[in-house]
Length: 77
Image (tube, rainbow, N blue to C red; front, top):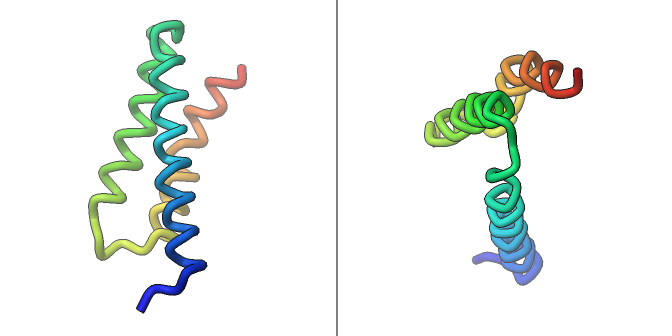
């Protein structure tokens, strides 16, 4: 049985996901093409990893840190 705290946290996570999508959708029209390409590369890799239910979130994040580092570096320079 799910506790009230867990249900509340899940609701907050869903709301934050929705806010993230809205924020990124608002930014897309003003992003340069190169930035959109980098964002898409990182986001699509993350989603592909998350779609593998057997892969622990910790492993997904470790892999993403290594893969996204080059894109993050390009973005800050």
